Length: 211
Image 1 (cartoon, one colour):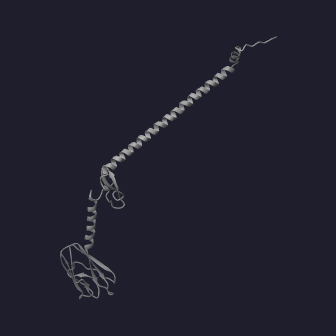
Image 2 (spheres, rainbow, N blue to C red):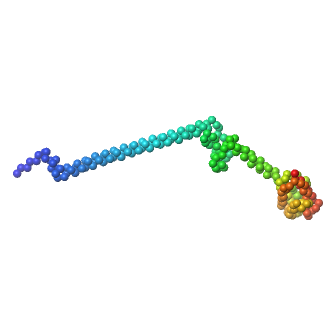
Image 3 (cartoon, rainbow, N blue to C red):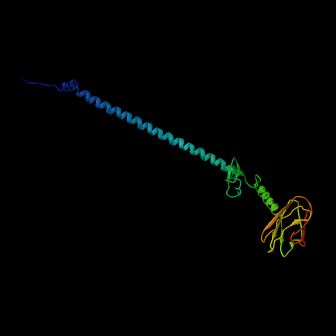
């Protein structure tokens, strides 16, 4: 018995057996994966391009803002700020930024920081000037006559080896007996003349004149 198979019948036999459908399915799957892969690649490339454009635009905006700010203060010379503050240009105006001011104070010559420092220095000098000293030595007060302003604090310091004190003749003040190196102080709040002496040694006399 002779068997004859036509060439045209081969594909149909493969399809009838299911082999042809399997090959077609594989081909379609490969094509679908290729299309999907191309789409994902396109999306990634497009997203990268968009991100680069956004980053470039942001940098340009920042550079433009910095340039405008520098231009606003470029004609001025940065002032000298008290340490640890540093000068910074804001809204076309130099200010000093630092821990001392917290949020920023006007630079010297612009907002008056220098005048505040001068006022503080003057206050310190005034406080220093409001203290007068009297030395007790060799059984005498020195100076024997002391002139001060109202509100002055007078400090007596004993430099003798024996005890001394300062007692007002009118009872306005009375200091304790001072050993060598000890001090007593009294603030004169009213104008007037205040003679005083040493209680253990009445011949030791002096006077404070408050003007």
